[in-house]
Length: 141
Image 1 (cartoon, rainbow, N blue to C red):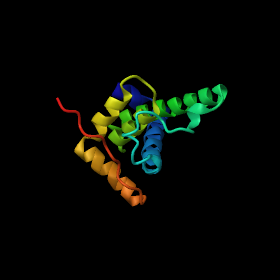
Image 2: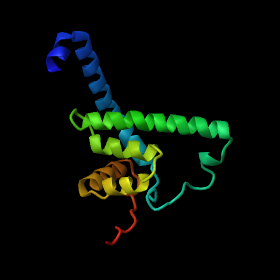
Image 3: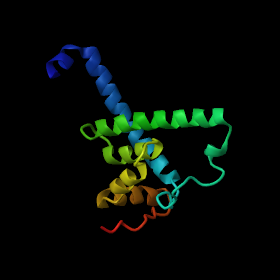
């Protein structure tokens, strides 16, 4: 496969461009999204009253489609950043927070409770002059 990529210089250029875009986008977009996240995001079982979910069904479906589309793109970018330059785990965490699927909260908490991930997220939030994230107590087994 590597030979096939090398034999197609246009494809190599596209892959380089995609990698560079994901790297720069991750450096710019991730801090903004993490700084905008409420500190109690992981404590709330449901979205706050007055959120976009109470709007007209057409608006709600449009926002839901855009949100999940962006989440899917960020998830793919985060997975790629695990082997390419960028903030892969943090990008995956933000992507998961945008996507809707069963078991989402458990997966988010599993990722954010990892020491280095939580430290990195709270460091980014501190640079944006935002309070650290508040996590619920770990489940007891």
